[in-house]
Length: 475
Image (cartoon, rainbow, N blue to C red; front, side, top):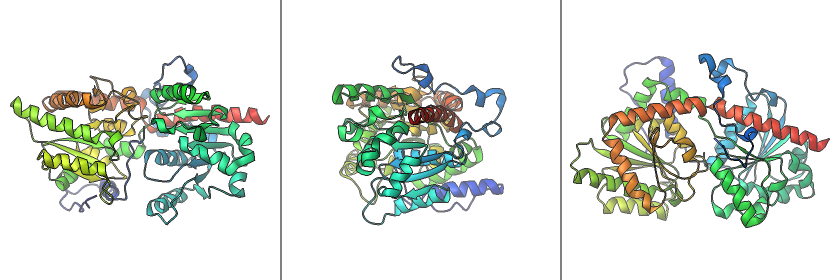
């Protein structure tokens, strides 16, 4: 990622804003990640209403009170012992989401022990940095194997397995003790790809206390696939939408910080303040659809010329590159840009731990994940917090976030979605009022459903249920 120089020509600001802005800019040059996740409102008859935790949490929003004045819904976890098992420790959505939950639990006094099942054989800067970050917040790091680990699993009040792949840890480490631990396991699943449906990963899934999944679409998919492909039944399943962190919302809701970050990022990319900037912010891979986005963007540029539209210059930024190890797919993207001679319109930015500066700098987010789409797609609600309209594929969790025609526009996944995406790009490019209105409605939707305290409330309901089951199994 290109290093961003410190901004030296600001109008003097209050000290706290200066510190916050400098922090954001520093983080934007940090070792990177992307959540697309990472990695990211259920009314299905297959899941009882008590497992639908995505309705607005009125107790946190009534009367204009702030979350700080309310009781933390996770307070009941004080003095509990939670063991977290992640299949890896990386800058991808799954591990980072689990880390965020670890920090929320630590804030109320929960003892949290972290296990990474698969670590690189050699020293890894990312692993070291993330482990340091956890230990600084009071999370204990433990080896994935050994008697100490087995003892921790047996003593823990709750064991959280993160992602389907983490299931391999159960037999490999717990061995004869697996049956004793399963009744207190909450399995947090984020995957939407078919290759995760292997019996070696999920054979114990029917016997755990519950599965927590980020969207109804993904929950339905897992229910059907496990039955049809593996002949096993899902455990009680809880659909829990994610929420934006308080830190991100503070930046999103501060007009001064947003303006300064917008100017800084645009200057670093060579984009003028009135140019239109579309962004796709995901790790660069075929499943995230950067290739189809660029084709749609190019088609939109051609349509603009053919229709002789009077538009400001349009740019596209692809945030999520790996400039240190450029993949074949990214080479294809760059070759396409060169072939179509749109190098001045398209910009590539390395993966980044902090997406806020880029969200502050753009005008429209494109969430173009392909096939079954995102499990949730947290970047979508982060963009909506910045009052950005979203152009998303009509697939996966995006359909549970974006209200088509209200907070953005949806287009089909696959090649057939390229032209509709191009038309949606033109529609937003030519209509400032539509962009503004959609952005405001998206922000209102975030405030109603997708804040940190909403997520904490939803997860608290799941944890209470799972802890009660674990207690009953012991008795």
